[in-house]
Amino acid sequence: MNYQVIVIGSGPGGYVAAIRCAQLGFKTAIIEKYSSLGGTCLNVGCIPSKALLDSSEHFHNATHTFKTHGIDISVPKVNFKQMIARKSDVVSQNTDGIQYLMKKNKIDVFNGLGSFLDSHTVQIVGKETQSISGEKIIIATGSKPATLPFIKVDKKRVITSTEALELKEVPKHLVIIGGGVIGLELGSVYARLGAKVSVVEFLDGIIPNMDKTMSKELQKSLKGIGFDFYLSHKVTGVAVNGKEVTVTAENKTSETLSLKGDYCLVSIGRKAYTDGLGLDKIGVILDDRGRVAVDQHLKTNLDHIWAIGDVVKGAMLAHKAEEEGVFVAEQMVGQQPHIHYNLIPGVVYTWPEVASVGATEAELIQEKRSIKIGKFPYKALGRARASMDTEGLVKIIADAITDEILGIHIIGARAADMIAAGVTAMEFRASAEDVARMSHAHPTYMEAVKEACLSATENRPIHM
Image (cartoon, rainbow, N blue to C red; front, side, top):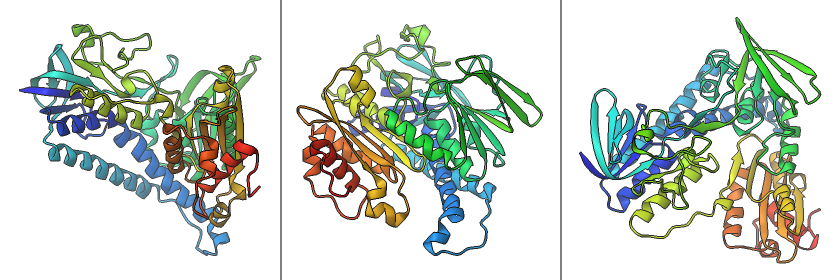
């Protein structure tokens, strides 16, 4: 069969690219090696982790805040089997929704492993083997969990994020290697459910890609629900003995650390997934980190093949992949779309949430930019007091001369939703004063953004 566009991979980048191609009139096919659509995000990433995060937060509130709210209940118990079942149902609803969108947009779906026979022909090995050809091809094969060469991931006691979403029990002591987003989110799920959680991180802070203020505040918050942190520690070994896992590490002065738990989550990031694609057959170039090399238009060294999402350079974020899917599709019909990569927000879905867009303070200092900073704490907000969500703050970084907002960093309740307003402001190159002079509904969490902008503009917050 012949298609105008073939998309390999059905994650957020792939399925969005396919939909936009179909909307633009292309006869489109999508190839997915697994039985369900949606890729890592919908099946073993964003969606299932958020389902468990929400369930565990409900339990945490039932055991810690209901009484203060005037809600008396008997001692709540975790029905972990039901929690996992609900998570699976949420996943099914979302993947079924993608299947519906494929039918709605008349996109042909092929299940099986796609690999290049030549630069226009893709072989699909599934229940049967078949080949399809495409005038244009988009590679959207995503990423997989990275590991260390001396660690054997047995998927039983030494696990990745995939297995962490399918455990049969709440760990007694979960040791996490890596202080990044994925590990902290999953760690917070189990900490809320009663697990002891220990994080071993090579660097001197957690969530290293975010502003250091956010890192310090989140670490303080997670300690409050039972996390232990071992920063500036290099893992030297992981050993399994029955149901016990021992993680050894050493700090910068070669002092050794030994942690014993019943599970070890290896969460040191993700790497581009190109296995089995046959890129070597057609001469598509990879970069030094195994990602598909692309130009500023996301085009490979072959003129009719593009690559998007986790398989190329940049942040490994579902919404970044989605934007790139649309970006590539619209270029195919001669449009001139644009992605402002500096304004793609990042979010950590712990509670409190952490959300960020733009530059960090450290980045701007390194660039020798003249900046000014405004902060405002959640504890000064009427809305936060009413909901008992007083942890957190908003940090605004603006140019000291022009007052243009250069970075917005939030830790607190609903930060993940609030950051969209920050993206909007920065897309239109708003100044801190612009935002400070906009009317913000009272009482809301967004008032903290207004107050932080007032602080950055003239150091004159009203409510602090």
